Structures are given as structure tokens and as C-alpha cells.
Length: 311
Ligand SMILES: [Zn+2]
Image (cartoon, rainbow, N blue to C red; front, side, top):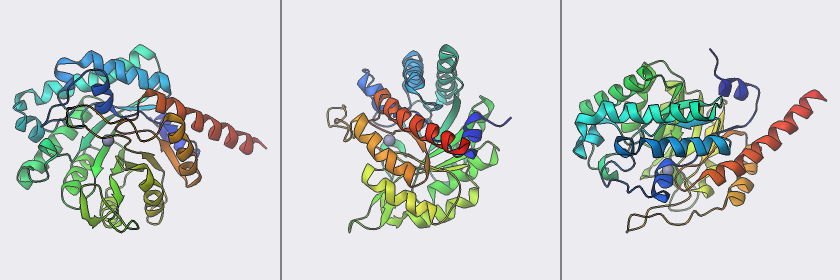
């Protein structure tokens, strides 16, 4: 079966996805774990996950991502919760499906596989074999749980990202490749978000071998999105998209205010669509109101292109 997001992208339409789950959890009182970040939310707060997913769907998201961003076994084990690997991932995916059922909306449910290390500490990865095995384990479990696609998130280097992509590609679901980058020190080059020494175009060239359905610019500051979209377009002619980062954590476990209001994000998103982006959403700091504003951008563009097509 061809999912509706695939049909819409094939028609050149804009598809809206959800916003940031971790930041939304914090806004609603959940305290992020210092090792597994948002990864433990499903263990005791599956209803909260479901409610957040539902709010994003009601705001206009046509694809939602289950809260499996920080749930690889090596992350959960570092948090002392490795034995709950299966149940936490099951509960996270079920919460997304429950939101789809509760709203009755025709949305796709993605499983997220990220390269975030325990405690966001780049020195805390397990040995390469364990890391590769754990990506494989979560990719297979997400496929077994019935997600419609896999989104690879925080892809920004040519070592950990390759392991995650290899594992995801092997299960046969459509892949979205999510590059996380930022402007380099001199302000012109684009580098990995946490890897200032790795140019993002090198990472991209390597990871395109895994034949993604969509390449997105995710968890990337808004000012780096347009250059990143251009960098992708110079190497690849498939659908692109953007879900930027709008906030960051504060020392007391909270979040800073988002750097863009919903209308501010929508203004930039219009330019990204002009630059050929066809997937719009938000990462950290983007709540349902941001998604609602992006939905308006998508409706306007899609109506316009439909009128144009009919003329
Ligand atoms: Zn983010």
C-alpha cells in the first residue's frame, strides 16, 4: 500500500509533520532523564505521550513520530533501564497509534531511530559492534510493532549515522534521513550539529547510499535550514523537508522560550517551500501552535498548486 504521505509528496504537495516531543513533555511537567532524555516517558507517562501526539494531529500533523528517539538499548542500559527495552518501545509506539485511533485521522506513524548517545555525551557510545546491534534491534522491533516508516534522526557524522542507517535500511520500511547541522564557525560552511569538524555534505553523500524516501533538515537552527536545503538539493533530487530546533534546555531542567513564534516559523517555512521543501514540522521547542501555523502554509501552497494544476 502506498501511504498517503508518499502520494502527496509524489504530487508535489507539502506534508506537515509533528513538533518536538521532548520539549512538549517538559512543558507538560515531565522531567527529562539526564541519560535517556525523553526516552523513559513511555514507561510511566504513555497517556501523556498519546495526548501530545493527538494535539499535534489536531493541529494538522499528517505524520507523527513515536517517542523512540532515546530508546536504543545502549541508552536505556546506561540509564539503568535496559531490561525495559521492549516494553518502553512498545508503549511508545502504542501511544502514537492510540492518538491516531482517538482522532480518527489518516496519519502515518513513524518510529524514530536516533544516534543520540547516553547523556548526549559523544564519549559515551558503546563499542561499535554493540552500537550496531542495538540499532538493528530497535529497527526490527519498530517494524514488528507496525510503524509505517522509520525516521533517522540526528544524522550528522560518518560513523554512528552509518550504523543506524544500515540497521534501518535492512528492515525494508521507507526511510527518512534526518540531518542535524549548524553553520560552521566562519558562518558559511555547514557542519554536523555536534561535530564542527565534519562537513554535512560529506555526511549526506555517504548516507544517500541508503536510498531514503525523504531527506530532512532536523534539529537544526532556523538560520541554517535554507543553506542545508540547498546543500541537499545539490546532491539529491528527491523530496526534502525541515523540522528545525527552536529551543534548548536550561540548567534547571526547563526549556528556553522558542526562538521563533508560530507566525515567525511560518514566515520562514514559506521560503523553505520556495526552496523546494515539501515536508514541514518542528523539532525541540515547536508545539502544536507552531504546527497549526505550518498547516496554514501547507494549505495555502497546496490550494495554490491545485488551482494552478487545474488551470
Ligand atoms: Zn530537536
